[in-house]
Image (cartoon, rainbow, N blue to C red):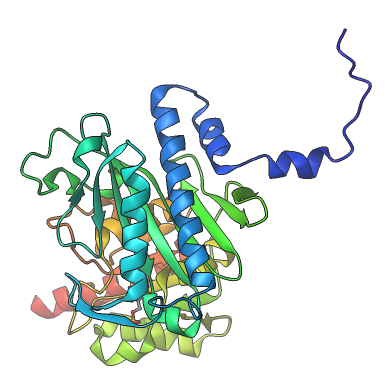
Amino acid sequence: MVDSSYRPSHEGTLDRDSMTLSRHVLQQLQSFGPEAQDLSALMNRIALAGKIIARRLSRAGLVEAALGFTGEQNVQGEDVKKMDVYANDVFISVFKQSGLVCRLASEEMEKPYYIPENCPLGRYTLLYDPIDGSSNVDINLNVGSIFAIRQQQGSDDAETGEDLLQNGRNQLAAGYILYGPSTVLVYSLGRGVHAFVLDPSLGEFILAQANIQIPPHGPVYSVNEGNFWQWEDSLRDYIRYMHRHEGYTARYSGALVGDFHRILLQGGVFLYPGTVKKPDGKLRLLYESAPLAFLAEQAGGQASTGAQQVLDVEPQALHQRTPLIIGSRENVALVESFIQEEERERAAALR
Ligand code: P6P
């Protein structure tokens, strides 16, 4: 006879503390089948990478070789921070031992990195930006890691990662880790967006917010207005509109993950438009814009290049850049309306 007379008095908090990331993945997929187990294991490895990186960041000012530059430049032509290299190596090491991932494609590596011993079984590719916003590391401001998991299509014999050049609707999972006052992991498997907070005392990411929805409209616009002189007229008109209308406020941290996280929770729009120097913008499609666009759409928001949905862009190259306008549906639509208006005026002038 089951004794159901006992009533746990701490059921709520203990149940919450028991909803770990790996458990949540299985619950999301409502399956204990092989693919569900793979994704649960993969997300667990992402979580481990995040914990190792968070640990180093928390002592960056004390640990030799954690601050400052390496003196090298990456494939993007950007100066490489020591934390960029460390975090990149963390993901490689963690996923080597996963047995599941055959390839890693990173902002820090020109070509995909192969783990041959994993390739027979591991049919997954991890695409990631190991530390996004690394210029914030030396001043102790928030930075993030952005990731996406894709199924490897066929055998990549040429070791070029050609099969990765598919639009963002082919992502199995996507998310980011935000290294801030607390370490937050946000992810989606295509079944809503969920946020976990690292409890250092448990060493576990614990579910904090399930099924996050971006408000349809928000007050924040997040853009580097120092590029104003480099933008198309339509973007300048949009920014002038922001300046002249009450109810908007500017927030910009210089690190995409933290700026996006604010938009995800409070609403608004983040923009990194094309500029004279970088007509396609600065942000990379496969491991920055597409993972965040996946989250934005899952959370009821929108992500646009200004010309099309980010998730519909068919990549032509691994490190392809794309303009990004992402956030609340109404805020993104307002930016697009200025772009479309300029296109109408241009077309009329040609007639
Ligand atoms: P800017 C960081 O270098 C990054 O890739 C994103 O994290 C961030 O949103 C953007 O570039 C900042 O670029 O030109 O405004 O300094």
